[in-house]
Length: 113
Image 1 (spheres, one colour):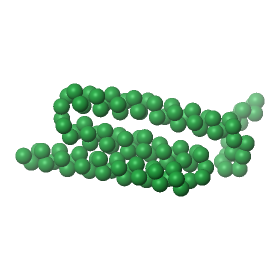
Image 2 (tube, one colour):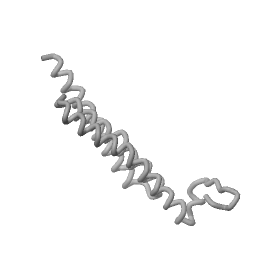
Image 3 (spheres, helix red, strand yellow):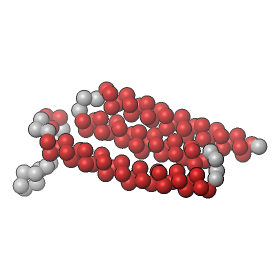
Image 4 (cartoon, helix red, strand yellow):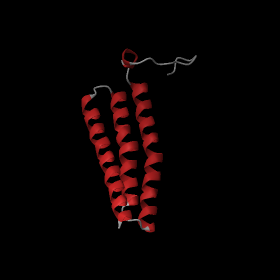
């Protein structure tokens, strides 16, 4: 009986932490004007928020089939999210001419960023 209450409390705490991370990310995406800052704020939801919620959902039912499905979703998000963020940031670096006003960029010998 006490084990079920501990599991419920852990699930609730993880899901609440994930929701707080999602709300902080939504606030950051709407607050910041610069694309790189928005990408950083959106990354909070991808990593911390989603992983906490998935971990809470994995602990909740405790069945093997649902655990494996949620682990697969978490693995796919852990792979896809950094790739998408990197591609968006590379597009911003290559297309925004006013980027040097906002941040310091390192160029190679050919002048490429």
